[in-house]
Image (cartoon, rainbow, N blue to C red; front, side, top):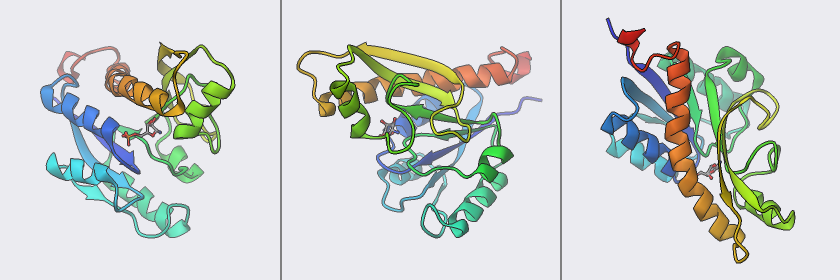
Length: 206
Ligand code: GRF
């Protein structure tokens, strides 16, 4: 009997990476898979509207994203969802140890730089691209990796790179890297799910 992969996506903002995943699941590019829930720390996140349009339940845990109340509810929601994979797609809060331990090896994140460069606490959003320019990097990109307690330190699953142009600004880099992330997000999830099935593309082939 075939069983579909269950994915939960955590977001904080626009959710364009979430949209890339929704599209890939709907088109069958990511086969036998269901996005069972989208969780956001931010009730205003545009990504929640994207989830709603796709018929995916959206949830916002109570409390501030760093409070115990929030973390407890997040853990409960994640346990209820019984996910094979938790995808952090532009989620800006730090997951506590309890959540990371509870879902060890099942949480992945996308980061807009070539880790280990330009990662860690406070290194997110446009700041990442500012650092790339400040350091005079000739190449940048995006990384799809497992989540461990150390911020942006988990095992790298897949990376895509692009050349930094002479006239790039932090904003132009952010745009170009984001477009790369959308591809990386889909291929990273495909890769992780295939590995979880022992290399088989579909559960029924395993
Ligand atoms: C992406 O650059 C992601 O790498 C970063 O935040 C951005 C989120 O974009 N962590 P979106 O919400 O998926 O549009």
